[in-house]
Image 1 (cartoon, helix red, strand yellow):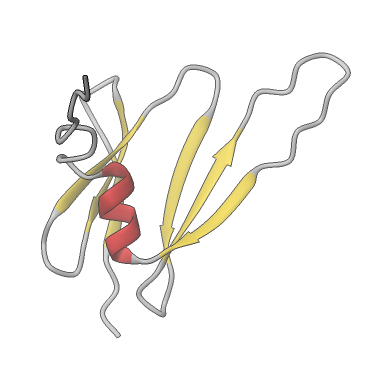
Image 2 (cartoon, helix red, strand yellow):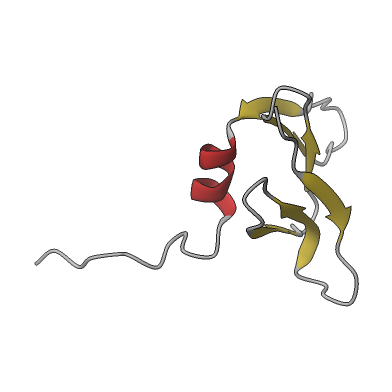
Amino acid sequence: MAVGSVENAKGNALVHQVVTTTSGEKVEIPAMAGSTISIKPMEDGKYQETITYPNPPGKNYEPKVTILSEDELVAKYGNQTGKNLQVIA
């Protein structure tokens, strides 16, 4: 199965990583204040998403790890995410 690629973003403080899917689509993974989102391609064509949260004094939060298909990754972080909102009166 084809595997996408992930590279660290350069020159844009709002983007942490850029994922190139197997179809060639570029997906920008946002940089977050305090937390970190890291995407790692897996050999089966899926992606491992790891969200690391800041640890306030006295707390120890474990990273949240999720396995996403390529379609789920694009739906969550793709350039059309949040652009098809409708206002219901």
